[in-house]
Figure: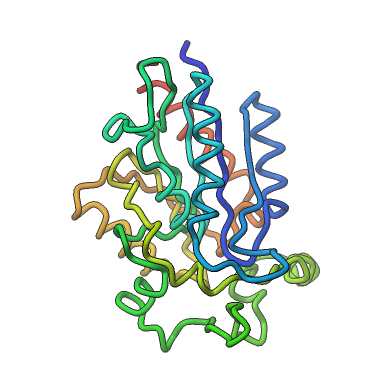
Length: 262
């Protein structure tokens, strides 16, 4: 049987890989190799000036895995979709510019209520064009950080957790660099280069289900292959519905593993 791919997790804005702990543990118990880097677009001492460094962080991991002959699945959450989709550039069967005949490759992308921007389209562009920026829950501050406007960010991210859990994870939020959300140059529509599995979260208050469905529809209209599953969860299903999230990822792994020719 074809070996299972390496799973590279790309966390969202204001967050760290800590929020993935339950899902990572469960998948590792299934024998899956999981990598979950802390990306520089948030959690740094000073705001970064672009998104390029975060994309390169993920690409370095992809390059290390594929050069060792291992296939890869990207698991992107929320803003992580902008980074993870961009990072697949050159590592797919459709676009193998960075691969050799003995390399592994990106088999697909798994999106968990994640953004899927067109190439050279920043998150701010997506919010302005598709979702009306006046309704966004965050804004750029003159200190270089992206501030959350909501008095209770736990309602945005953790509305289906217990109050105690929501307060804990609120306390773990990190500073987010605004420039990373405004940077167009590194954005690449990697979702057009390989199949996508998308977990639609019906109770998401940060990226409403209507916005998730609109992104999927736009990607399909652009020619992408997108398989969707639905979970009754808020913006952080890896915390509120870890079993369902693990099952979704595991199903995607088996699907892509079966289609791999390596």
